[in-house]
Length: 140
Ligand code: IDP
Image (cartoon, rainbow, N blue to C red; front, side, top):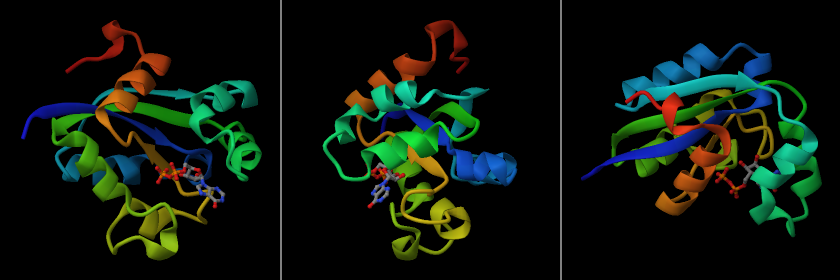
């Protein structure tokens, strides 16, 4: 399997509870290298652009409000099969359905406040990385 890059967010519910280190430990234990990372605070409008694909969904406004409610940590992860591997470590969207040992099973508060985001494919990973990072910030 090829070495891939994927985009990850540690969401406001997790930064508020000081879970960045615990989440990073799980990512690194799964073989995902954090090759870029920064803590930022999005406006609701910036969150809206990032989640534009969901704009027709009933939870869109709530999601944008939540993502702007506190600091987030944006990251680029690199490793073998990184996109699928990160999705596996994250667990299902709804923490009640997430597998044991996953980030969402251990830390998520609800289907909305679910601690992490991870790209769902190669094309979205590229777009999402480019939204937050310049090439110079990716230190592989
Ligand atoms: P994913 O993050 O597991 O890829 P998506 O379906 O792409 O899940 O949804 C994006 C984000 O929207 C979720 O991570 C979660 O924060 C939020 N979300 C998804 N479904 C709901 C819902 O039913 N109510 C509130 N928020 C939701």
